[in-house]
Length: 52
Image 1 (cartoon, rainbow, N blue to C red):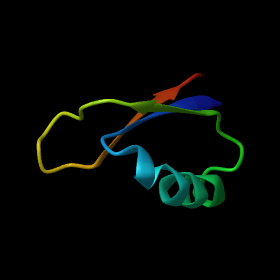
Image 2 (cartoon, helix red, strand yellow; image 1 turned 135 degrees about the horizontal axis):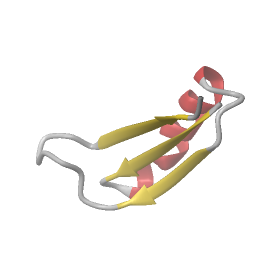
Image 3 (cartoon, helix red, strand yellow; image 1 turned 60 degrees about the vertical axis):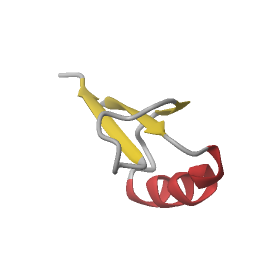
Image 4 (cartoon, rainbow, N blue to C red; image 1 turned 30 degrees about the vertical axis):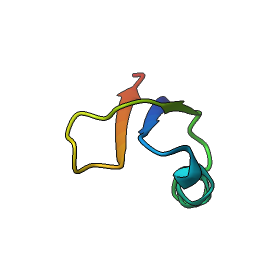
């Protein structure tokens, strides 16, 4: 099991990102946050945490 934290620079990108991640990771809880990401040119940053 795990968890994804998704940082979005632009709130209007949320529906497209959520739709893609829901298809790719249907069984993983995802938290969406609106914030600056690590580099200026990036629109999305994804941090994954695995629980063993």
